Image (cartoon, rainbow, N blue to C red):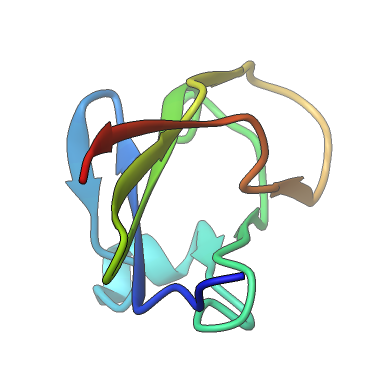
Length: 88
């Protein structure tokens, strides 16, 4: 098994910067270097949309399936499952 060197999340097709203070109110990327999971602290109109994770390592690049999150509820964990290889 090859270790992943980096994970990044896209929100509605745009890179999501979880370290941005505005984004930090809604998102947490805990253990991002381990499993790449993204946590939505709240689900609202500002977090409703399409999410996709991109993982990169020496073997290439993989993209997760796109997940749609609707408004409502509490903390949601978007796991990095269902990968497809996009480049080697």
